[in-house]
Image (cartoon, rainbow, N blue to C red; front, side, top):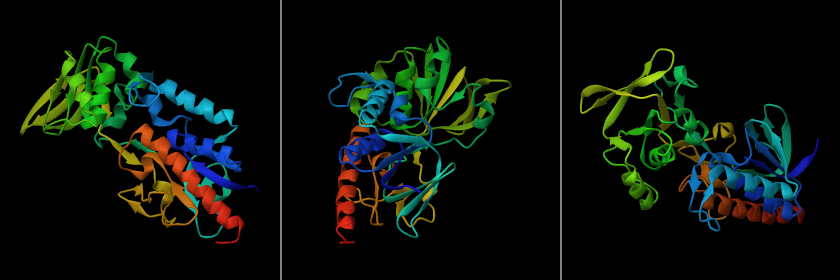
Length: 306
């Protein structure tokens, strides 16, 4: 069985950046991605805060990341990592399809959308979506509802406003907050966007497909009609596979220091999985830092200092 210098778990912006730096460092590197390279930035609409691009579509930026990584021949395999075995060295990254043995690990597994926990599963593919970029055009000139909070809800509404006839944001917050104030300005400029605040979603309504939602505002129930619902209540970390690994977590996110080191020597983490500001610029920066730290670790290992 091959022993890699480093296995990167996740092929989003952080993981691909880590891969680029690892390949340039001539490390025997493998990137394990669950679904598709490029990560969640591919689901963003227009990205305007990534240096070097005044405006670029999220999927195009993701494609550029992938193309750049493949230029350095980064080996990417598709597998769902279910466990990280740290009991002995080298480490074992255990996937559903294969086990990957490695001297160092970079965790870049990102986040996933939080679920409402109501009856939304019944309507997946029948009017309920978690991805505006993927499904917005199904609702051309139709009425849509965004259930969410703060930046995720605002981004969804802005992605929908030029496609849907009417966009209604339903939030349980008193006020919507955004990572960047310019987003709030653009939200106010959306003439077809309305916001219902302090609202609790009780149930998604419909028979064969979505017809609306039942909500409660200040104790009074009402129905908001819509042809589609986009759920944008935030994200939670993809860290289930770390259970029992000994890697320290804080609210499910991997705890790292300034050098992207975890509490276990030889294991590093970067990107959204480390929490904090969930932005692509932060992710790529941490991807570089994580591999720089991994290179130092591997050099010490080779010299017998560890």
